[in-house]
Length: 163
Image (cartoon, rainbow, N blue to C red):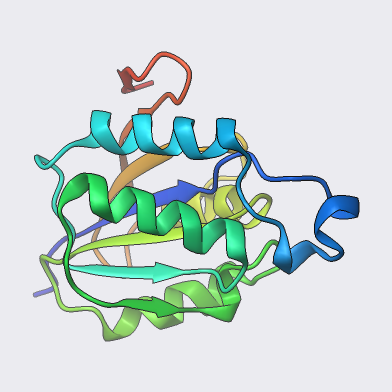
């Protein structure tokens, strides 16, 4: 019998414009993006542990992952997944999760529109809304079933929302 896996989807914080960075994958977090990501990580706190971290190779996602894992006290490695880029495939992400053990807590750090497309694939609905910058959503998922949305951490209010 399959057991649950907990999936945290994290959208990167605010990043500099394309013109400043030269290309999309080199864009880094602004001061506001860093501050907001750090505040969200503090709100998430050490009560939300993770066992594995997967991150987009883009600079702003890597920076957000670093800030978030520092805030929750994760000390393990992060694995880069190309499918977490903005145009990544949710199916490829779900395939990557096949190697994760049951009962593990996994954090995926990436971009829009791929974050809400992954959420849609997990909950099996097309109505899941896009992610704000620095937002985090938690899902409880049993492979082969629709995931259950647990909460969303609002980056502006730092409140956990269940709707």
